[in-house]
Picture 1 (cartoon, rainbow, N blue to C red):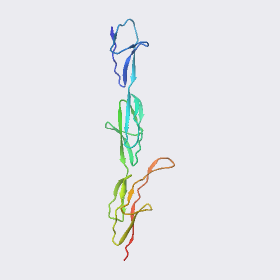
Picture 2 (cartoon, helix red, strand yellow):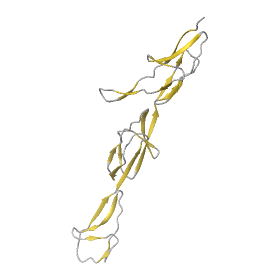
Picture 3 (cartoon, helix red, strand yellow):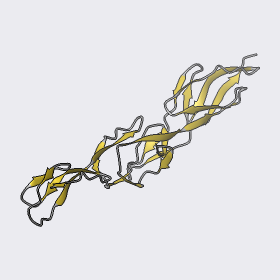
Picture 4 (cartoon, rainbow, N blue to C red):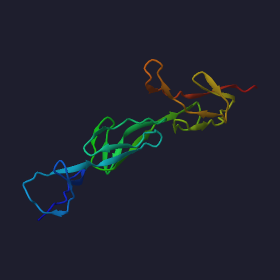
Length: 193
């Protein structure tokens, strides 16, 4: 009489023993009447790999134990992707990850910011992010009447909202690039005597 063992192997689930014709369960006992060869039959464990990108839609993928996965590069308007973060470790986009269990990656982003300078005025520069609105202040300069703010050849009245949109896509390559935020200048004329 023999008892067949239940096997354990990382990344695999033990199913049963087989002699090529019959199935024998691990932990089961039977009478051995002749020499025989048994093969352990396994299934490969499957795991889910999730990506939390906070703005870019990257679906969860199912992979088998031992598969290699190339980490994607997410996109998010107004941000630069820095790396993936999981279990206290940084992983770069394009790096290879070997699947060993269920795993979740979180994207780490750096916000693209711009410096808005108000020339010819007492206001200090401000840092703003893409998509933020800047409400233009009302300047005062002795002996002048304020007309408008000027940026990149376009005029803006005081208290106007200026939305920061500086990411562009190249029509030739399809790649995204940033352009500098123009400086905002005052324009005025001397007050009448």
